[in-house]
Image (cartoon, rainbow, N blue to C red; front, side):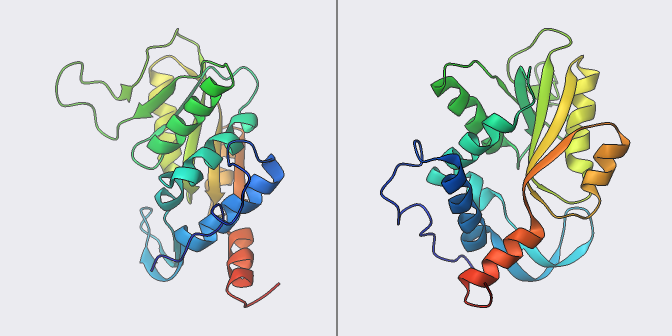
Length: 209
């Protein structure tokens, strides 16, 4: 069930200009209000869980998408030349980061990696501008569980001749993804962890501090 989303509408200051510390807190609240649900869920990884996070409820939210772009842009490793992610979850994220970068005078193309090759035309796995071989690309994800989804994007980018300089997720469920990236030598960051979201969700519901 979708909860109300007062995080941004209750504040007079624009999401485009508010400081990043305050913006991060408002983004956390939005995750708790519209994306986090408790129940019995089957995850993409095949695991069952007592909670579910639908990141698209945040990344496709008008203020949420802008907040995501502003929060993620400064987290990109130095030298990043493009952002990329596996469709569908990463599509609005890479777009938001690319657009926010453009407003800051920076050219940062967004690449979308298909799960299957295009069935016609070039039959490409990667949609977006073609970059010089060896370009540094950061992979973005909404929610990381085991880490396999983002790893597919990493592999496709490497096959295309790009260098992946890290993975950044909005939420880390802490179910093996970080460890997988460590084993493969990929730097990993997450904006939020699931315990942080659960604590804040409980506080907003009046169930804790």
